[in-house]
Image 1 (cartoon, rainbow, N blue to C red):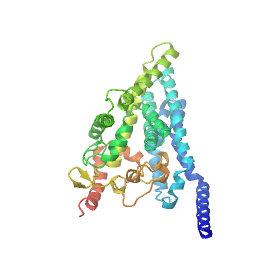
Image 2 (tube, one colour):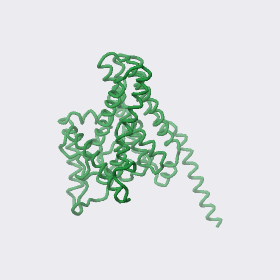
Image 3 (cartoon, rainbow, N blue to C red):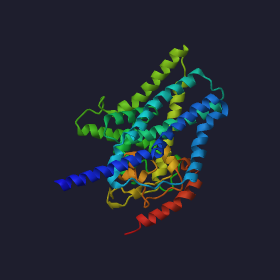
Image 4 (tube, rainbow, N blue to C red):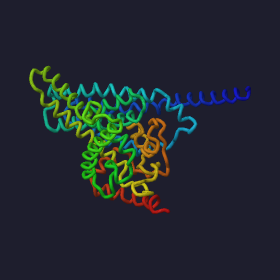
Length: 385
């Protein structure tokens, strides 16, 4: 018994030392708050006016890729015996919870901006709206994605709330119950095919993904012997809620101005379109051309870290809550973002998502860069016996 106490005491001391070491490494933890620089840049750009409305665009697609080059990759992993400890560190969840409330206030501020009509020229509107979508789509959907995988009802509610702000609530169903089941197979609309342009992929993923979410939800209700056409059907709620939310914002703005403010619904739906387009660009990048081995007709090997493109660039992973360690996420979907691992055997993107998003908009350049990497992956993982 004494020996057991000594062993337990040693384990406790070792864990305490590890926790203290993690606390001392405050810089890395605080780094996840850098995501808030994106909306801050939008706000600053708006109040500075004119071309400054493109400040966030410059930060996202120029500064961050440059910093990725300067600071390189972070391939350090949490030791396996410490993963549980770090997973339970509330600090990392606190950052995500802060984002939910911040984004809600940010959307209300955006509605106020378009209501009072200080943006005078079309190119100011364009810069502001694109920048806004980089917040709600680039970071907001990333946070929604992270929280939507968790068991907590509160975290799932936060996820749905963020998705409501970009008219993409069906993602909660399709991603968790569709994409994670069928990823890296021809059955998955969110897995881009080799040689498929982003534009063709966008049409397939957006429309088929929405229809597939209806199918999955209908199947769930039939299994529970519940009526499909009822308020038990989440797809009905997910389709209507963004419209109700936008209508409420429009009504409030119109009452404030004493006239119908058409700019509010226009702005809301355009930024939503741009936001979920950004999500689909990320889907395209994460899974382009990767396929699992078909071990029997319609049956595929288990999802492994080799079945998603990975990027461990330290700076962009701070902004995206380690979403770029996507290989581990698909192999272990329940893992919290702070403990996702880097795998050397995972296929590696040449750089972080910010630069890859621009690259995928130019198909010839994309194919030139990615098809060579995909061919190497295919030879190593699909042609071997």
